[in-house]
Image (cartoon, rainbow, N blue to C red; front, side, top):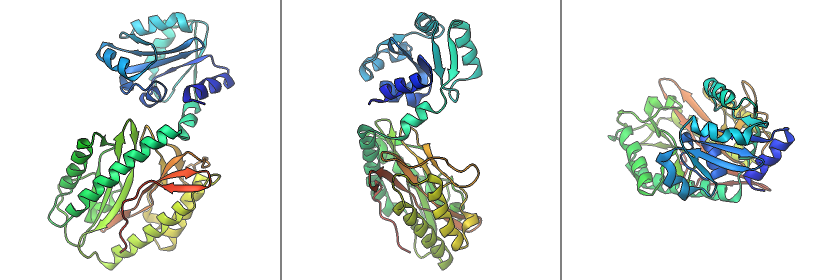
Length: 352
C-alpha cells in the first residue's frame, strides 16, 4: 500500500473526506515535490493537487506526476474552494498557523476543517523499501566522508575547519549536511549541541563529531567521539561507559520492544558508572525526511509510548556530559528488521 493509499484509508477511518497538507516533509512524501515550504497539497475523493507558485512551475513538472495549480494565494484557495465545498477536511495542526486556518475558513465557508492528529506521523514512522534505500545511501556517504576527514582531526586544527571539510565533501558528492555539524572538542564536549567553533583542538582532547547527509530528501545521522593524543583516564572511563551503553541498546533493538525500555537500558548502564545525571537527553529518535521524527526514544519526562516495528529507522545515541571537563556521545543509525536490527552506520568506533 502506498503512502497515499495509507493516508486515504486513515482519513476514511477518521470520518474525513480529504486533507489540506502544509508540512514540507509530508508534501514531499506524497508528491515528490522538494520545495514543500512553498507549496500545499490537497487530497480529496476526486484526486490530489499540488499548489505552488510560478517560481516552481518547471520544477513541479519535473518532480511530480500530480496535477499542479500554479498561482499564489488567494488564487489557490479560490481554485480549491469548489473541490472542498461540503467536505470534512483534515489539516496539520502542527504546521498551520492560526492566521492561515482563519484564511481557509474565510475562503471555504462550506468546508468542515479538523486536525489530522497523528495520521501522517504514523504513516512516516515505518519506512518503505525506497525510503530505506535513500537513508542507507545517505549514511554510506556520511561514513565515507567521516573516513576521509578523520585524519584531519588533530591538535592545532580548529573545530570549524573540520566542520567545513565535512560539509564541503558532502556538497561535492551531491548531498547536503542534514543539520548544523557538531564538532565539540575538549571542555566544549560537555555541550550536546556544541556546533563547531573557532576553538583549536588540543592534544589530549576528546572530540565529538555529530554529522549526517541529506540525499534525495532523506537524512542520516551519526556521532563518533575520537581521541586526539592521549586523553586522561577519567575521560577514557566516560568513553568506555558510553560505548557500553550504546552497544547494549543497539543489541536490544527488535520489533515489539518499547522505545522507552531501550532508553532505560542505556540510562541504567550509565547510572551504574555514576554517569546517570550526565546523560542529559533521550536515547534517540526516528529519522527520515526530517532528522527528528517518530518514534521517540525516551523514558523520562513523558516516556515514549512507541513500540518498535520492522521498517523503522532510529538512532541510538547515549552521551555523558561533564561541564568544565568534556563529554562523549556515540551514535549509530539502526534499521529495525523483521527479526532484529541492522546497523547502517559503519564508521569505526575507537576503543580507549
